[in-house]
Length: 503
Picture 1 (spheres, rainbow, N blue to C red):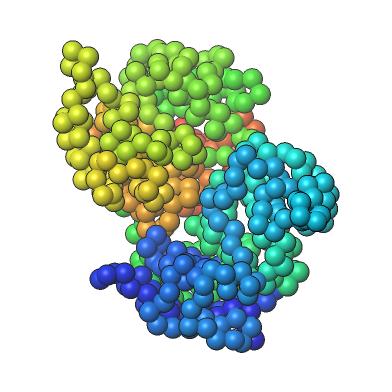
Picture 2: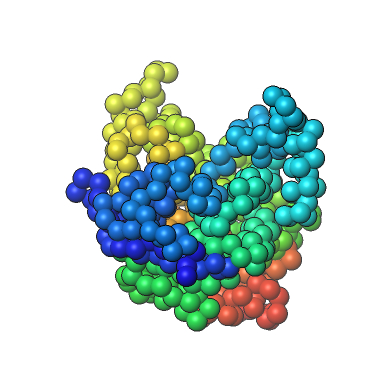
């Protein structure tokens, strides 16, 4: 008997059918992946499970008992707990206060804070072997530590089913690995786990079964150990993987960026690199390769100590981000929500943030011209928003990335440094981002694309540089590479002198 089963759920909002006869079955002691594009129905299905939405048709089963719908209180009583993408813990609470909020330990009529602190220490040590001060403030913890507190709070309720909704979005790789170990340990303890993620590599390594949603329907349930990621991707988007990279051939122009002998202690050394106008150049390497540090130096965030950087043949010094921006360099950072956009500002304010001087005359800002520019960018980039005044926080990850790109298009940048541009974006939105990257170089701009997604590099780039332990060890045309060779180069197991294709 499954721990949880959702049968033939239908949910309609006006003319939009968010769920269309969708089903999901989760066994005890298993991790069940749930994947699909934005708009595929994942959020609606989870909100039905949480008791937030009442389905128009279908049924829900827990331990063999049928329900037509849940209330949030029933959900908790039935042992279903949720770990949300957003950390829903008050920053001013201590760890022990957050863990026991709403279920405090009392001594007579008073809350026994010392008992809560002792129990908090015991639980964190028992579940995660983690020494976290119970009086530490939530706001002072890392994203991973906040997530551990959130998971522990859920476990206090002794759940039968745990739902993880995009839990790794705000985590770095080391923290992701810790999270996956925690999820596997909970599975081995007999919990039924639903794991929702855009990161298909996580789904592949973690899940026992995967349900694919598309247009509100469950189109497949597969075993990720015997089904390739390419096939799961095809099921999600209903197109072949090769169609995901809509890159058009562009004639290459003169050198735009030339880097010679660039060095920074403890980061990278003797870097020679070239990007021509009209060219998309890939850059990759494992953690610690120096690739991220190199990108930061090229944007003036962490300047190099030796070497030369030339833009359009002219020697430049990139000692600050202001200098880099003045030279026409743009950066899309990996941590989009913290560094790429201002979430609480509007689409318009974000889009013109780097180019306000274009809309200013005699010290006065022309809001009409600013709005016209933003509307043109919305239409050009196909940003799904209610309008220029919509808050960026309200947009999906893919549309937030488009707004981050709009800022630099408005600035009329010529060299785009893209740091993992498709991280945390659903498959369908990735295709749109890839299309836009291809269009960036059509007017003669250049792109340096740092990515750990090997198919992305091979599908988009003209050439790829590979870094290992601070040095560029290979440079090849993308057409002459495959994923296995690229991974072997990045890991240092396939190191040979590469032919020079660009001089």
